[in-house]
Length: 179
Image 1: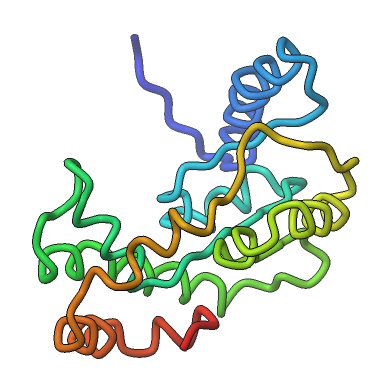
Image 2 (image 1 turned 180 degrees about the horizontal axis):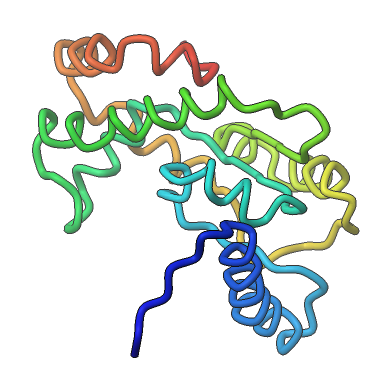
């Protein structure tokens, strides 16, 4: 293979859009679905590129309390296993996300942000509201948000560790709408 340089970014984006449409659109069509959803959490590291790549997309960002996210990461084999390590891993992700969100013009774009805790508290009602905002018919889904699974991390830390984590996250917690 011979690499190719694209001096026209639009040409490269067009090729990539075709690839994305083929991969995801084809899978959706094969499943009889009118649309597709891609839910990689770390997409928020490259939102500026994804916003440019798929300008017609609706971005649904499901947030979770950052302390609970950190606690959850400690139980994952692929994530750092210490509080300090998980903080070093997650803080740049949150800061990059918040920087993007605060600098991009979301006017006229389809962007929806919803808290996982709200979805878990009333999955049928919140699902209906979310689907309405997306302009799709409501239907029962195989996936649900189970409140007990979200709450199981709320008391993982003792008071001192939780205070340390909240202080280390600084403005992230309130910037994401949590206390």
